[in-house]
Image 1: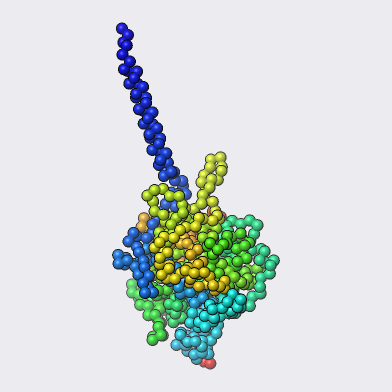
Image 2 (image 1 turned 60 degrees about the horizontal axis):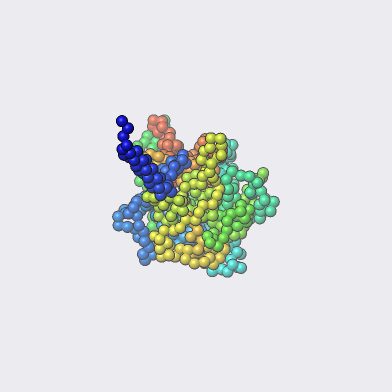
Length: 589
């Protein structure tokens, strides 16, 4: 019997309609959240461990009565809040006019050093006296913020018309030198000859002839691996150190290689000495450091250990014409800090050098502070420096917000490197290098404190000499900070400057590289490059890579029994490469 009841058919139709409605409802919900859904690639997963939020959530900073004030919840802002502390160093250094007041390598380590007056000689004639204004020129350390104060003030007040002549005077001009570690990267390098070449006095460097146009035309090749690498070879690299740092070198006889060798020998002797074939040692006990000061000039150091307030800055300046040759963006929206100085250029195919003088742009600078034993490392770069966030990204949890299109619920501290498809048959996502990045916007906490300190509050008054209030300081961004060799899970930490470490950014670790800075004594002569910056690995470019991760104890001590000292750390300071042995003892004359 055939039923006339249509109910089953109606139920089937109702179910289909419900399923269809549910499908479109799910699709609609999916479309609403589609913009928040993304698929991470291999670059994203690798950078996840470089994009960590480095400041604790309780980090806060203010500026009251001329001093930086931190939250009561923080006991050590340098390590708990490294990004915030990086901006503190940024403002502190600018407020102290690091570009002019601090001592550079010529002034920290004179090319023909005399001995300390406390060890002999006649003050003002043939020895060096800390704090004196009449030390023999060219033979003793100089802190320009004190000894050239009048010239610097005159330069600061000079108009653009008269400023250039004042800026070129030997007392105040900065002479950028080619990176010594760059030229020492080869395997057949005469390090002694190379070292002496770069230790030439400032007077000799100032006497170099102007570079011809034919030499300048060779500075930018038709094709190159990295724009940062081109800048690295042709920039005026100027490293300066604050007054605390400078005074420690001077007062403790570390402005010359002879004094540093004395520290090495004292350290080595305490560990192991041999008398008539018998080994003696003070192990396990160490010699306590006794630093010199104005009241007690007799230092007795067994290690190089800078005071905690010491700061050093490596800055990278390029001639404004080089910026044009590289088609770098220059506009009034994000101006460069400008200064008249000298780039020292190696003339290709020769052993000669020439000078490229004039207005230079500050493209990047790296700050190191001794607030913790392994130092705080932090790098700032101009927003128009191509490729500034390449490879490792840019990480700032305090000052500026990431302009990236971010998923919901994530923090805006990280700018991811530019990426592209390699367009192969089986395509992969790879880095898209040497491009500009979007200009990040400042967080209010940084904007407020910059105004209180007086950084970037006005227009530039001179292209020859910067001021703290120059608007150009607002054009620089924090690339990252580093306070440890590894993170808490044992992964190596990385940090590099897009100019200084161009070509090997993928393995750059400031703290590990500088841990290898030290002195070895061979045949009675100092060797400050026994441990190279580079090892036998290569970057994807084919350039030598620097070391990273945890230091190796075998770098410093031979593991014989008894052990012996091979390389004495010089407190993470590569600048001792410029130290020379004393040339005048002042005795018997």
